[in-house]
Image (cartoon, rainbow, N blue to C red):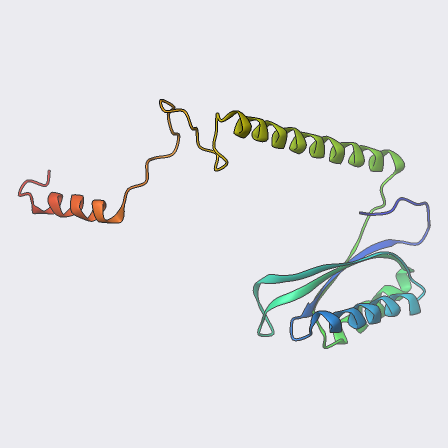
Length: 177
Protein backbone atom coordinates (compact mmCIF):
# COMPACT_ATOMS: atom_id res chain seq x y z
CA UNK A 1 0.00 0.00 0.00
CA UNK A 2 2.91 2.29 0.55
CA UNK A 3 4.21 4.33 -2.34
CA UNK A 4 7.88 4.11 -3.21
CA UNK A 5 9.82 7.36 -3.38
CA UNK A 6 13.03 8.97 -2.28
CA UNK A 7 12.49 11.81 0.17
CA UNK A 8 14.02 13.16 3.33
CA UNK A 9 10.60 13.72 4.90
CA UNK A 10 9.46 10.82 7.13
CA UNK A 11 6.55 8.69 5.90
CA UNK A 12 3.76 7.97 8.40
CA UNK A 13 0.62 5.89 8.55
CA UNK A 14 -2.43 7.02 10.51
CA UNK A 15 -5.26 4.67 11.42
CA UNK A 16 -8.22 6.27 13.13
CA UNK A 17 -11.75 5.31 14.16
CA UNK A 18 -14.76 7.56 13.77
CA UNK A 19 -17.70 6.80 16.06
CA UNK A 20 -20.78 5.26 14.50
CA UNK A 21 -23.07 8.01 15.75
CA UNK A 22 -22.36 9.59 12.37
CA UNK A 23 -23.95 8.40 9.15
CA UNK A 24 -22.01 7.38 6.04
CA UNK A 25 -22.52 10.84 4.55
CA UNK A 26 -21.25 12.60 7.70
CA UNK A 27 -18.02 10.56 7.76
CA UNK A 28 -16.65 12.07 4.52
CA UNK A 29 -16.40 15.66 5.93
CA UNK A 30 -14.62 14.29 9.02
CA UNK A 31 -12.11 12.50 6.78
CA UNK A 32 -11.61 15.72 4.83
CA UNK A 33 -11.05 17.56 8.11
CA UNK A 34 -8.30 15.10 9.11
CA UNK A 35 -6.69 15.33 5.67
CA UNK A 36 -6.75 19.14 5.77
CA UNK A 37 -5.18 19.03 9.25
CA UNK A 38 -2.25 17.06 7.84
CA UNK A 39 -1.90 19.36 4.81
CA UNK A 40 -2.08 22.53 6.94
CA UNK A 41 0.92 21.22 8.92
CA UNK A 42 3.07 20.98 5.76
CA UNK A 43 2.18 17.35 5.14
CA UNK A 44 1.63 15.59 1.84
CA UNK A 45 -0.99 12.83 1.67
CA UNK A 46 0.10 9.78 -0.32
CA UNK A 47 -3.05 7.73 0.21
CA UNK A 48 -6.35 8.07 2.05
CA UNK A 49 -8.71 5.11 2.40
CA UNK A 50 -12.05 4.66 4.11
CA UNK A 51 -12.09 1.02 5.25
CA UNK A 52 -15.77 1.03 6.18
CA UNK A 53 -17.87 0.39 9.25
CA UNK A 54 -16.72 -2.54 11.36
CA UNK A 55 -17.47 -4.04 14.75
CA UNK A 56 -14.95 -3.09 17.43
CA UNK A 57 -13.26 -5.75 19.55
CA UNK A 58 -14.52 -3.99 22.69
CA UNK A 59 -16.69 -0.98 23.43
CA UNK A 60 -14.93 2.37 23.19
CA UNK A 61 -16.77 5.26 24.84
CA UNK A 62 -19.95 3.16 24.64
CA UNK A 63 -19.70 2.47 20.90
CA UNK A 64 -19.52 -1.09 19.53
CA UNK A 65 -19.02 -0.06 15.88
CA UNK A 66 -16.81 2.48 14.16
CA UNK A 67 -15.63 3.68 10.78
CA UNK A 68 -12.01 2.70 10.13
CA UNK A 69 -9.88 5.09 8.05
CA UNK A 70 -6.28 4.83 6.92
CA UNK A 71 -4.07 7.71 5.76
CA UNK A 72 -0.47 7.51 4.55
CA UNK A 73 1.35 10.83 4.52
CA UNK A 74 4.70 12.59 4.63
CA UNK A 75 5.18 15.15 7.36
CA UNK A 76 8.14 16.95 8.91
CA UNK A 77 8.91 15.38 12.26
CA UNK A 78 8.56 18.70 14.08
CA UNK A 79 4.88 18.94 13.12
CA UNK A 80 3.93 15.39 14.13
CA UNK A 81 3.18 16.32 17.74
CA UNK A 82 0.80 19.09 16.61
CA UNK A 83 -1.12 16.71 14.35
CA UNK A 84 -1.26 14.02 17.03
CA UNK A 85 -2.55 16.49 19.64
CA UNK A 86 -5.18 17.90 17.26
CA UNK A 87 -6.43 14.38 16.45
CA UNK A 88 -6.69 13.52 20.14
CA UNK A 89 -8.81 16.64 20.73
CA UNK A 90 -11.28 15.85 17.93
CA UNK A 91 -14.48 14.55 19.53
CA UNK A 92 -15.45 12.63 16.38
CA UNK A 93 -12.43 10.32 16.61
CA UNK A 94 -12.60 7.43 19.09
CA UNK A 95 -9.03 6.18 18.68
CA UNK A 96 -6.06 7.02 16.49
CA UNK A 97 -2.55 5.78 16.01
CA UNK A 98 0.31 7.20 13.97
CA UNK A 99 3.28 4.98 13.12
CA UNK A 100 6.44 5.60 11.15
CA UNK A 101 6.22 3.48 8.03
CA UNK A 102 9.40 2.44 6.24
CA UNK A 103 9.31 3.05 2.51
CA UNK A 104 9.72 0.09 0.20
CA UNK A 105 12.43 0.00 -2.38
CA UNK A 106 11.57 -0.62 -6.02
CA UNK A 107 12.77 -4.22 -5.65
CA UNK A 108 10.60 -4.86 -2.56
CA UNK A 109 7.55 -3.38 -4.30
CA UNK A 110 8.20 -5.61 -7.31
CA UNK A 111 8.52 -8.71 -5.08
CA UNK A 112 5.28 -7.87 -3.26
CA UNK A 113 3.49 -7.49 -6.58
CA UNK A 114 4.83 -10.86 -7.81
CA UNK A 115 3.70 -12.58 -4.61
CA UNK A 116 0.22 -11.05 -4.92
CA UNK A 117 -0.01 -12.26 -8.53
CA UNK A 118 1.05 -15.79 -7.53
CA UNK A 119 -1.58 -15.89 -4.76
CA UNK A 120 -4.29 -14.67 -7.15
CA UNK A 121 -3.29 -17.27 -9.76
CA UNK A 122 -3.37 -20.06 -7.15
CA UNK A 123 -6.85 -19.04 -5.97
CA UNK A 124 -8.08 -18.93 -9.56
CA UNK A 125 -6.63 -22.40 -10.19
CA UNK A 126 -8.36 -23.80 -7.08
CA UNK A 127 -11.69 -22.31 -8.17
CA UNK A 128 -11.33 -23.89 -11.63
CA UNK A 129 -10.56 -27.26 -10.05
CA UNK A 130 -13.65 -27.10 -7.83
CA UNK A 131 -15.85 -26.07 -10.77
CA UNK A 132 -14.45 -28.94 -12.82
CA UNK A 133 -15.19 -31.47 -10.07
CA UNK A 134 -18.73 -30.11 -9.66
CA UNK A 135 -19.38 -30.30 -13.40
CA UNK A 136 -18.13 -33.91 -13.60
CA UNK A 137 -20.26 -34.84 -10.61
CA UNK A 138 -17.44 -36.12 -8.42
CA UNK A 139 -18.43 -33.65 -5.69
CA UNK A 140 -21.58 -31.66 -4.96
CA UNK A 141 -21.55 -27.84 -4.72
CA UNK A 142 -21.52 -28.20 -0.92
CA UNK A 143 -18.20 -30.04 -1.16
CA UNK A 144 -19.46 -33.56 -0.31
CA UNK A 145 -18.66 -36.57 -2.43
CA UNK A 146 -21.54 -37.77 -4.59
CA UNK A 147 -20.14 -41.30 -5.04
CA UNK A 148 -22.15 -43.93 -3.16
CA UNK A 149 -19.17 -45.79 -1.63
CA UNK A 150 -17.09 -42.74 -0.79
CA UNK A 151 -16.03 -42.23 2.81
CA UNK A 152 -17.07 -39.04 4.53
CA UNK A 153 -14.37 -37.37 6.56
CA UNK A 154 -16.83 -35.62 8.89
CA UNK A 155 -18.87 -37.59 11.41
CA UNK A 156 -22.45 -38.23 10.48
CA UNK A 157 -24.74 -35.74 12.12
CA UNK A 158 -27.10 -37.18 14.72
CA UNK A 159 -30.64 -36.00 15.20
CA UNK A 160 -31.29 -34.53 18.65
CA UNK A 161 -34.27 -36.83 19.28
CA UNK A 162 -32.20 -39.91 18.49
CA UNK A 163 -29.52 -38.71 20.85
CA UNK A 164 -32.06 -38.17 23.65
CA UNK A 165 -33.47 -41.68 23.14
CA UNK A 166 -30.02 -43.25 23.30
CA UNK A 167 -29.19 -41.33 26.48
CA UNK A 168 -32.47 -42.44 28.09
CA UNK A 169 -31.72 -46.10 27.26
CA UNK A 170 -28.25 -45.80 28.74
CA UNK A 171 -29.50 -44.15 31.93
CA UNK A 172 -32.28 -46.72 32.41
CA UNK A 173 -29.83 -49.62 32.62
CA UNK A 174 -28.66 -50.76 36.04
CA UNK A 175 -25.11 -51.40 35.03
CA UNK A 176 -23.59 -48.13 33.79
CA UNK A 177 -20.07 -49.53 33.62
